[in-house]
Length: 274
View 1 (cartoon, helix red, strand yellow):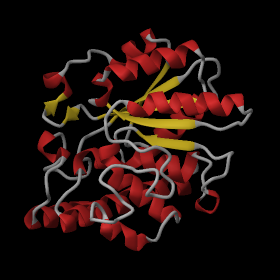
View 2 (cartoon, rainbow, N blue to C red; view 1 turned 180 degrees about the horizontal axis):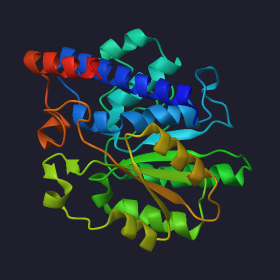
View 3 (cartoon, helix red, strand yellow; view 1 turned 120 degrees about the vertical axis):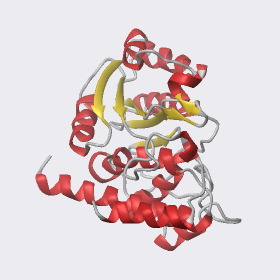
C-alpha cells in the first residue's frame, strides 16, 4: 500500500469515528463500542479493497459486504454515505421513525446493504450461499462477511464454517472483529472460546491473524485471502472495543450506552487530537 493511500484510510477512519460519536450523542441511542472496533475494517473494505460503486448498486459483478454483527450499522452507514449511496443528511435520521437507516442493516430500506442482519449468526451462512451462487454464475466476485467475536458463539456460525470448507468456497472471506468484549462482559467471562484461530483451522479454514486497526495489515490480509484458492479464509482481526476513546476502550457498558454531554466533549477532544 502506498503511503498516500494509507494516510487517506487513517484520516477517513478518524473522520468516521468523530461523526459516529456526534450522531450517537445527538440521538442518545445506538452501539458505539462495536462500531468503533470495526472502523478500520469497514473503511479499508469500502475504500481500498471491494469492487463496489453507488452508481452501479445492482451491478451483477459487484463484490458483496455483509455486516453480520448488525449492531455496528452506524459505521457501515457512514461508509455508505461517504461513498454516495445516499445523501449525507440521512445520517441525522439514524434509528428514527421512517428513516432509511434502521438500528440494524435493512436491505429493503438502505441502498448498498446486501443483507438484513440483526439476529447474530446469520451472516456467514448467507454469505457462503451468495458466494456459491456467484461461482455457479461464473462471476469473479467476492463476498466479505464481518462477524463479532461474541457472535461466533452461535452454533449456526460453525455449521456455516463446515459448509464453507466442504464446498471450498474460496470467494467468501470472513473477518472476525475480535475485540474480546460483548454485551454483558468479556468473551472469556461469558463463553470462553480458547484459540479462535485454532478452531477455524480445525474446521478447515485458512486463517490470517492481524491487527484490526492497522489499515495496511487489513488490506494485505484481504489481498492474501482473495488470492488463496481451494479453501475459504477467515481473518482474525484483533481489535479494541470503543477504539480511540479512552473511557470506552475494552468496556462492555459501551456496547450500547448513550453518550452524555460530558462524555461527548471528552471523546471529541481525544479524537480531534489524533
